[in-house]
Image (cartoon, rainbow, N blue to C red; front, side, top):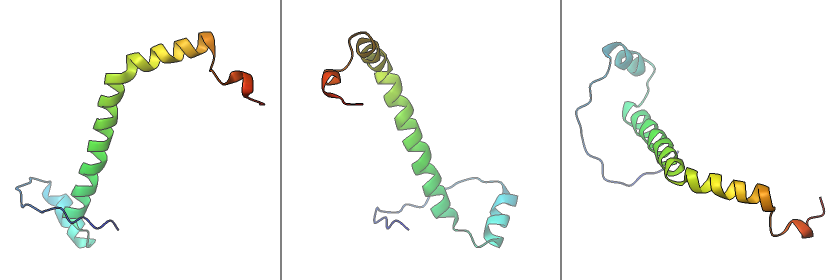
Length: 78
């Protein structure tokens, strides 16, 4: 488990009451689950934004490479 020493801050969060009860019945740590889910979604959003910002350049580079090949093609043995 990852040790996170970042400052914790209490917040108000509205969740489905049945979900909360089920999670508690299973002994699940809602704070840890929420933090993990937020980390995952933030990483996904960062990746989506990066691709949106760089997609045009990636497409152009791929087209250039498809047309001209890689500089190292002559040295590859496979």
